[in-house]
Length: 227
Image (cartoon, rainbow, N blue to C red; front, top):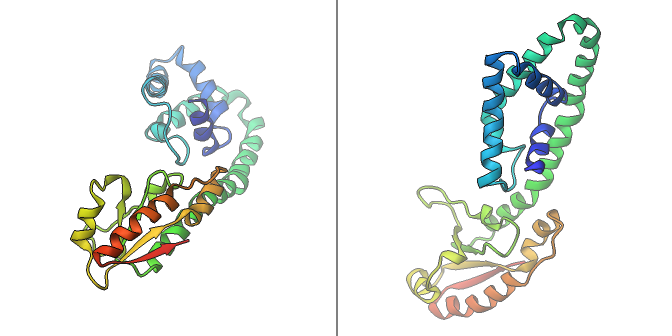
């Protein structure tokens, strides 16, 4: 949860945290501010108890709906600082410039760093020319993010989740015929994704491809290995 809150504040104006803390001080004397503060704190407590891990994302998703609370509490704090506001205005402008010119580009760069390997992997699936592609959940970090299909399944290849296939022989018999291609990603295909997460690749994809390729071949499909 500490990591979640750190991510949340890293995506905000750099003065939000000090102003928010000052706003909590106002909450002891103002009922409206107290309601805003309680509405901000309660989800942190509840999610900390039932679901501390949010997966990967921008900021902390379970506080996105409470940005208004945080902003209003910051406004309460700014009003409290009204007597010294002229002296703080320069600091506020500098902090705003730092947020726009430093924090936002840095976050955009890190977001690109995270998603670029998935975008390239997805493009390689599209360029494979296959009719179907099978992706395993354990073959790469968040590999199932690659399994996106249009509602009418008009995309090619149609992307399937390996773990949701109960009977590979039955699937092969159902979809295979001459001219149908099956794309099976191998371990090296997921290499850039593993590298992005600073994790060591596994041989799960290679083992699955070696097991499933003969099944699809015998059923009449041609197999495309993605490396």
